[in-house]
Length: 232
Image (cartoon, rainbow, N blue to C red; front, side, top):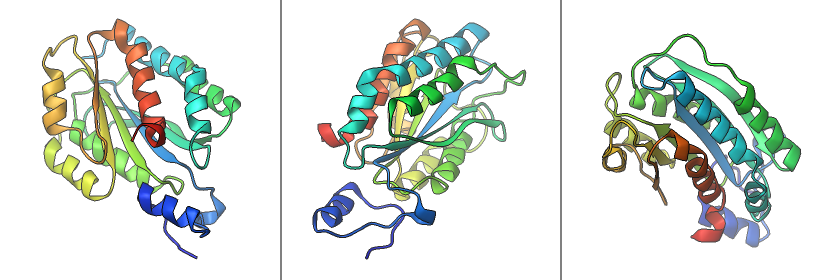
């Protein structure tokens, strides 16, 4: 028997194929993906933009293609957590770890995004601190074949720890960081995110030219992250 909370995709699938059982921690079932959604809610996000992010993310989880992708995974379930972030120390966990294995689970997660109000506090853009918070969450996640941070932002870091050393720390920890660049205020944001934020196995960035394009961008991004076993 092999006791490991986090295995590489190749190693885990080899063990499963060879007839080994990968035991869970505290009887938690193995999931194909532990995904943290890190959603920018700093000063640059106005109330309407905040609502567009929340609605877009909620609608993405209601898309039947997401459940179809989950059902194609080896374990047919993923785990999701989500938080809002601005500057260091202002990370608001809005979805504690939840396992999505059936449509009702996805609807429950979507309902959070579609109904949660914005808190009064808005801070600067602490991208490095947000990644550290995401890493901490992933250390508390259900046992998984993959661990991914999905970070969306419309700006560059202007407070807190430098991003690149933090990015490298997460990559060494076996975590993949993907980015969603909302390029309404920083047209070349994709270049910054590619250079300084994303990393790890199969990392990528999706660009939304403005908040009106956010829904399709996050839907595309989630589908690509969940469908990893189909596309690599």
